[in-house]
Image (cartoon, rainbow, N blue to C red; front, side, top):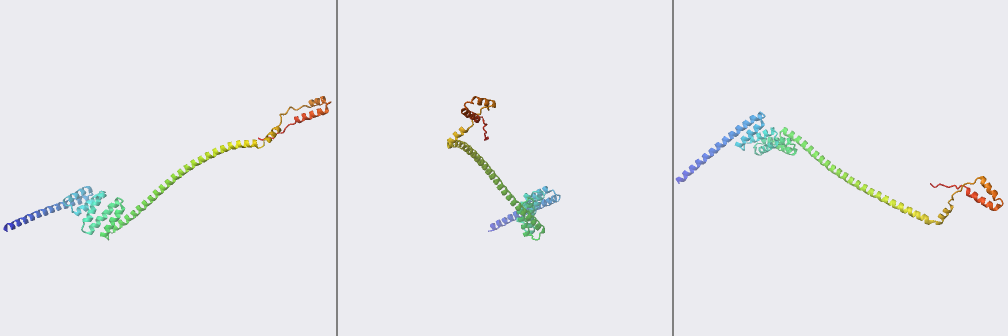
Length: 277
């Protein structure tokens, strides 16, 4: 029994010693972390933000749950315009912070980082979370109003762009359809003109032949009559002396001579022709 009590006492002593050593190491690490944070703060005040970031990271290396180091690292990254890298630090602070004031500041800075990246919807959400934790923060309320205006403008611009793109697509399609329609119409008109031309040539050819044939077959007697009525070639006109000689030579055959003289006079008349061209 005494042996068991002795072992129990020894175990308690060992456990206590180990616990004391762990606590001592933890306190040592926390002191180192606080020292790095102080160094980082001095560098931050000197606007040496990169060096300050390194100091804060060293502080977190000694104490991963050191919220001040996390928050200050986010600020140093933000001041160095590393907005994307700053956001996770602020988010971690907002999750682990025990007081609402610290949470509100973390969400406020998340909103600022999102605004720098023109991510207006996440910025609006962050500012609203900040106001939930600190409703009296006028600066956050002002930033929220600005973010909401920019978000609305972005939505309207996107809507107008979509409408313009849709209109352009419709116009392009209409232009393409009109071009195809005009092309088909030109082709059809060309085919129609060709058909009309061919039909006209065939009609003229057939019509002329039929007309000539019909005219010829219509009144063959008229053709013969027209041929008979065609004037005979004129003979040369007789002079008065020739007529007188002819009359004297045929004086004894008066009747016969008279008929011949009348025939000669009829042949001597000019035939008046009507031009048909």
